[in-house]
Image (cartoon, rainbow, N blue to C red; front, side, top):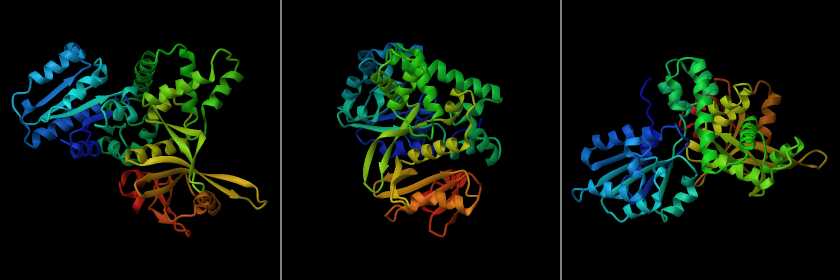
Length: 414
C-alpha cells in the first residue's frame, strides 16, 4: 500500500505547535489518528531539528503501557523524562483509557516546556467537552476517514476505478490494503460490530442491544433523507414495541453521534435566518461503514454522493446545514424547497446542491429553483456525478462534476 499523506491534518497540527494549548485529535476509530501522530507528526518534528529524546510518545492501548492508565504513574513517567528546560513534545495515543486523564493533562498546562498532543475516540472528546475539561485550553483537531483526494493518491488504479471503489467501501485507511471484495466487506462489517457497536454499548451501559442495532440500521437507510427521534420512535411503536420510551430513543441516537459514526445536519431557514429544530439529516462519517451496515444492499448513488459531499465540506472546515427556502406557488400556497447544503465559514457562505445529473433543461431548472429563490449574492453550486468540465448556467450557478469538486481544494471558488 502506498504511503498515505494526510497533509491537511499535519498542517493543522503544525499551525498549532507550541500554542500553549492541549491539541486534542478526535475522530472515529481506525480513521488514522495514531498514524497522524506517528509517523507523520513525529517525523515532521525530527526533520525540523527536534531531538528524539525530546519527543515522549506513549500508545496507551498497548499492554506494555497498561500501568500508565493510572494517572499518577503517567504523570511520574512523563516528568521523569524531562532532563532540561528545552521544549518537550508529548504524544499520547488513546488518552481516554487513562482514569481521570483530565487532571493529568491540566497539570501539564503549567509546564512551560510541554507541548501536548493527545488522541481520543469517544464521547469524552466532543467539542464542548474539550473546551470544558481543559478550561478553555484545549484545541480540537477533527480527523476523518480518507477524503476522495487522499484516497486517489494512495489507490492503485485510475480515478474512475478509485471512485467506484470509494463509493462502495469508503475511506478507512486499512481498506486500501484489502485485496478482494470479500476481504473489504468482512473488514467493514467486523469493525462495525466488534468495535463501534461494542464501544457504544459498553461506554453508555446500553441495555437494549436490539433497539440500538435497529436505530443504526434506520440511520444508515435514511442517509440523505429527513428524520428525527420522534419519527424513529413512532416506527418502533407502530411495529409493536411497547417497552421503549421516546427519551431512550433520543438518548441512543445521541450515543451513536458521540461515537463519531454519524454527524447530524440541522435545517436552516435561509430567508427567515433561523434554525428549524426538526427534522434533521444524518450522514455517516464513512460511506463504506454505512454500506456494510446494510450488507451493501441499498446503493442509491445519489444519497451516497450527497454523504460524500457533506463529509468533504466538513473536512474543509465549514459548518454545514440543510437549507430550507419558503416560496409561494401559483395558488399562493406556501411551499418549502430544500437546499442540500448551506456552508458557512467566517464571512464565507456557499449554497450547494447535489444532483446525479442535469440531463434536461427541466432537470436543471428543478435543481436551480431553490437556489434562485435565495435573496443574497453568495455563491451557488450544483455538484453532478458526470465527469465534466465545470460550467455556469444562464443564471450564474456553477455546475461541477463530483470528482473535480472533491479533487480541487479550491472548487468552491472556481
